[in-house]
Image (cartoon, rainbow, N blue to C red; front, side, top):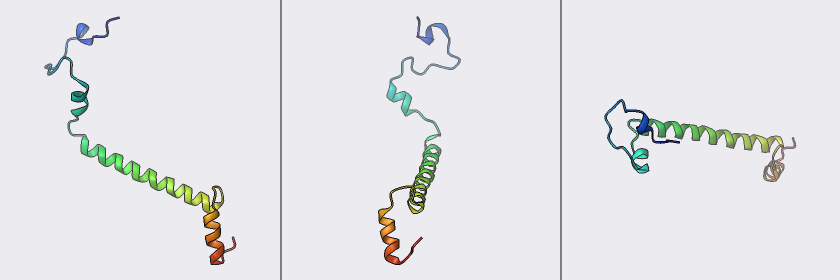
Amino acid sequence: MNTDITASVKPEYPVIDRNPPFTKVVGIKPGIKGPSMVTGGLIGLMGGFMYAYQNSAGRLMGFFPNEGEVAHYQKRGFNN
């Protein structure tokens, strides 16, 4: 089986490097670095907030272990 694509297909554009190393291939990202970082950061921020909200709500509703919250609210006089 021939896995060398240059043997059967001629390139449509000028060849810069016939056998580029991994670092060169990964290092070339024209114009997408900034927007990708912002998008990734926003997704991470929203995901982190949703995870924290879910855990906090779960503890308050009794779905997750909540000994600390029970002690805190009993000390303040809440009995729900």
